[in-house]
View (cartoon, rainbow, N blue to C red):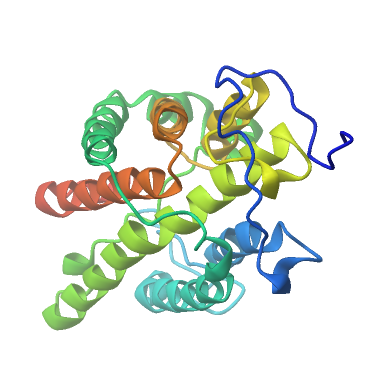
Length: 274
């Protein structure tokens, strides 16, 4: 700590202007300032672990630990999103001090991001690695290279098209409006700023060090099965963060990418990306 009770000031490329944010966190988070940035995604990830996965072709499906099968995926996903939204609402006061504005650059970055994501995924690098090593290989499991749920509501709910479309609405809502907020809050609202200083709430958004940039790119890559695409995409959003220093720009770019990816999945039938 320095004599003026501010966090340590490691060298970075942004100069001295706008490096500190003296806006206090809401009182409810005073004891645990990290909580509103970490809790929503933690809840989402825990609930995701209970979602039923896609069964292997030709293998009889068995219920998971909660008795859920692949047919229950829409219910499990909807409950997960509903609970996460409730947690986000409770944490929302911690995000309100960031001005709610979005630049055209953020929209453009989101569009470029989805093109890069789809293009890199089409290279099939991870699929080739899984095919070579086998799905049960410890390295595959450790790296999280498993398949996504790949739930096609038109196939699974073909007998009830209204339900299929209703689930798609929930899916788009979750991926385009909910996930971008809590994931950017965790990665850029807490993690990267915490690397800069333990008093992360006093670090202005967009202030970085080399270590913070590395964490902001590599950490989210760990939990995405599309490793190469995630590496490139999160590097792009980290650049946007430093460029505009605007939390909502990062959220907007994330939302645009996820929304356009959803459109691509639905129109081309590329459900493996979902």
